[in-house]
Length: 78
Image 1 (cartoon, helix red, strand yellow):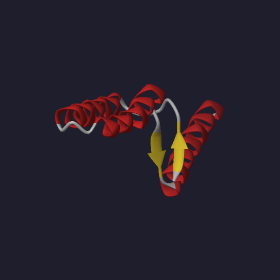
Image 2 (image 1 turned 30 degrees about the vertical axis):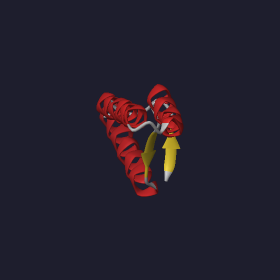
Image 3 (image 1 turned 60 degrees about the vertical axis):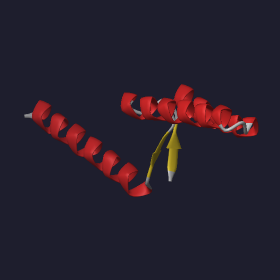
């Protein structure tokens, strides 16, 4: 798994924010305030836009980018 910063989609960030809000509400409503500390990692994940990719997705992304750039270079040379 590769963790990259500032590359999460807007939908992912929204879902993490909703999860953080739910954890906070559940922690306060149940009276177990120590569970509210779990909101911190979710907040940091939202703010930093952390996304996770597998190694195969990273290789496929690089391969597709290199094939596109090779096609563009071939088109310019022609």
